[in-house]
Length: 100
Image (tube, rainbow, N blue to C red; front, side, top):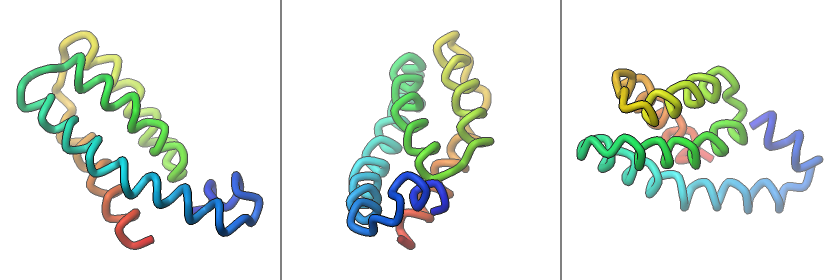
């Protein structure tokens, strides 16, 4: 939450709205990502990862963002060997937003 507090400059209403948007969008984006991975649609999955990366930054996860950036590039090359690690990041994000 520290990054959200930083960008909101203490505006609790802004923080609430931002989290509401993430809560609405992230589960659907994660679902579409999983569908693309299961269909071996790696370009589609790369596009999903790209969208999710913005939320990773907002949630203040720089190491996960770096991983997602590399993973997106690998998916664009047809390599999906690290899907389990990205899935773990997604699950952590979903748990976090569910608590807030």
